Length: 219
Image (cartoon, rainbow, N blue to C red; front, top):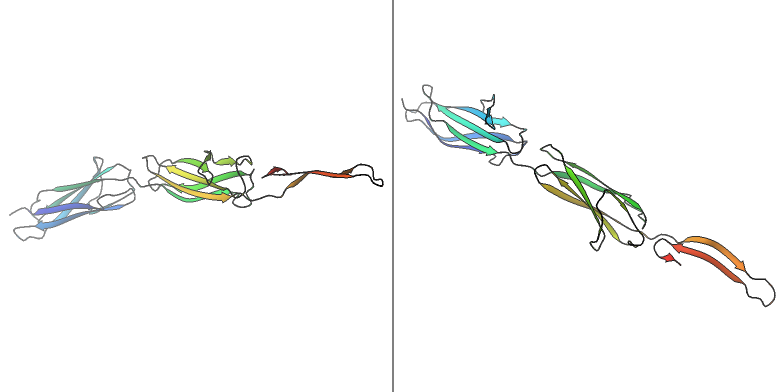
């Protein structure tokens, strides 16, 4: 009796990620005696044998783990030469599902803004989140989740952008931005109108008042 042979063994996908199901594919199977050939499978992860004798193995897997499949052909009487294939689990980038700024409307030049984000990593593990506030000219305004606007630096119509960057444990990152615009505000009365002088024939009376504007200062 001549032992059967496997001509090719590959894993699919070849670059697997943590949540994949990996398939061990044996092809070009031959037996000179034309016996029916059965393929027996075994799996290991980082050198530890798994209790799995099927052609597939399911995640989740740890990023960086080495997955090895060993396939052995058998013609019912004797095993043929075993063949192995391996892959290393690749990292998946984190995802940001939303970035929002509160308030998002009626933003005045002295408003306190809050940037919030929702993110996740399918691989698990901790995520590091950083914030970058910029104006329409690209000037950096802050690096915290909160930003106190300053009328001396920001004016009506300015676009204020929060860019969130999320970094996973393996160095992969993703960024997403959201913007708001500064609106004009009504001026305010600092001192009510008052009339000075004596109201007599031919006299001059003076009416005075004080106003200021958040965006423009004293009027």
